[in-house]
Picture 1 (tube, rainbow, N blue to C red):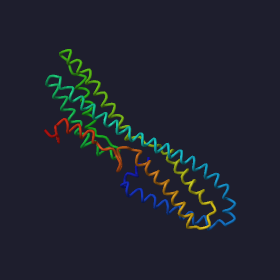
Picture 2: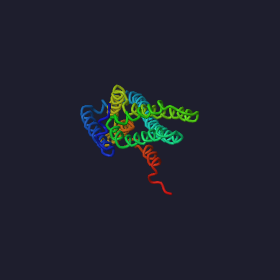
Picture 3: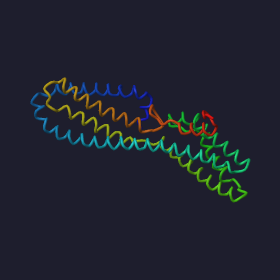
Picture 4: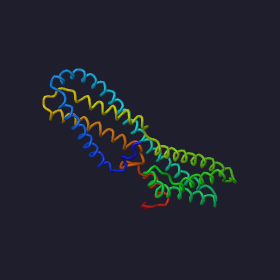
Length: 264
């Protein structure tokens, strides 16, 4: 897993990664040119061109799919967070129709769960963790809903809908935990990194009269590939890093339930 990338802010990681990879390829290119004669470059030019075109196409397709895939996962994780928060809000308002003490107990548990997600669980998500207190509160809330004994037909209908909302937010919670625990497999990372390195390596075998011009072209190719790899890594785990999903949906629901920041 590429979770180590979250140890540095993205604005430091991206330029640092570009500088380091460009330095490595620059040294490798200088070493390669010094060991190939002009005739070697001319001889290898046609072969390298065909191979580089094939490798470049394969790498471009792989990176395109990976960027699209991690972005879709990131966007879906954000929408799932909104679903979880909305289901809790709906549940809180729905149980207004229930008598005391069930109404107070359920609303208190909803409020407690949201508060735990905001202040206890979300900081843990940044490190791949989960709040055990939030976990227990979530299932305690489900137990309160399912074990409620309705005394009227209206209360029975409310309970049925409340069970639906409880299941909805628990499913969304489980999906949130899964999104934060699963990423791109190591074998796929290794394949992409090897493909990128080989593509850059074959660009060394083109005939370029001026070494400085070739250094610039290879550095540009290296920088683009490196930035795309870092972008994929940053989006891979949607609740970690500088561009992580924030708990705004939960904060908005909590503020609305407790009338915080609302004007008359």
